[in-house]
Length: 207
Image 1 (cartoon, rainbow, N blue to C red):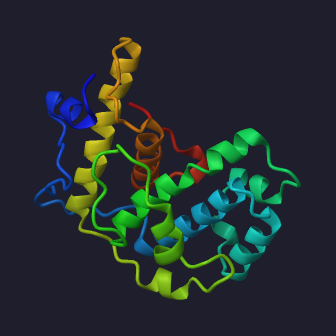
Image 2 (image 1 turned 90 degrees about the horizontal axis):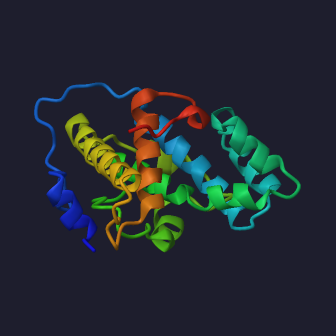
């Protein structure tokens, strides 16, 4: 069984840690650095609920920081639920992977690489994102978008890899042994949100 890197190379998908930026790309992203930073914070709160933190407390924090209007209907239902369902919690606990991709787009982490491992949740919680209950101002104000060519190149890498993974599934071919498919899917979801400017709940990860 191949590795994800071997699989990527075989399908002519960039396999190294850093994808070369697409030259002369001046495409303006629908989402700004501030909007991406705000979305990351909401995903952080959603994930916390998935791991057992009281949704009401998370909502109060997001509300106190002026983020209520950015919360999607699905997320609001999760935060307001007396007892979130097991299914919804299982969705919520994977949201840090989407947040990790978004953190990369605003320069908070150095590289994404191939989706062969889950994100560094300890770093995410302890170093990168303000604590639940804390002020978000410094985090939001420091967010700066990477160059458009870098973001588009990483988006294309993940989109193409997902296409070939889905083809392998349909053809009943074995997937790479070290591929973390939920990580790939969450990253693709995050990139699709950036480029399509859909409401978060309306994003589709099509290939």
